[in-house]
Picture (cartoon, rainbow, N blue to C red):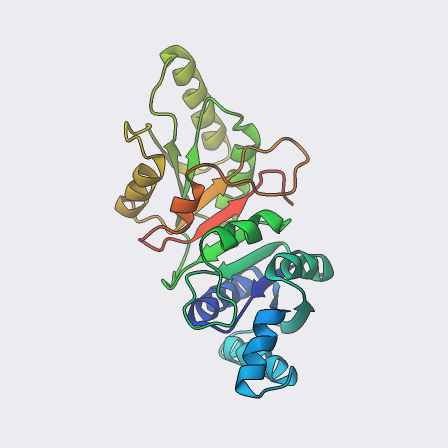
Length: 271
């Protein structure tokens, strides 16, 4: 069975941008694309206010699919799932066996635009990695950043980021999130071990020491902007076997960064 990228849409500008980025990824990695809309009270209210039937949503999905296939050799299918956005996306992932969900945020004109804590709830309910876009388009992912605390469990995170870097053929920036090094010898041993593993895997990388900034999210974003990073990868500190992303205390600020850098949210044990 061919791999699938899932794109929830409410037909807003940001969802359209996310769908466009997902279409580029689908063509690059030879995967199928599923456009999905959550049919719930928000949609039904919008349809009623505008005098439309449910078939109009199906037509919008078809139109969006036609837009995305223009100039691309990809297979796009559409899906309408009843329920809240929190219920519909996990169900759609299960139905399509998707490996990635690509979402847009900061929507202004959609039927059910996702912002703030709503998006975090969607991400934590989704059993596959979620790639978040705002309005800014991205041509490629040649530079990826992973914020990492070298004093926490990082082995599985490193395994996952190595797979991503090989997939995108990119340079990896590891931004340390533990600026106060209490045990310098142990810190040096761990960073040396990380460098050894990355070199052994053939990954082009830059290890950036932790900042003294009290606001970790601010230092990560500033470094990402200065390094022209194209994607920030957030990995939750999840126990082995977990299938959900659990956001940390500063993850929301990074996801909604003003530089509009796309953010991939995942659990290192996700498929």
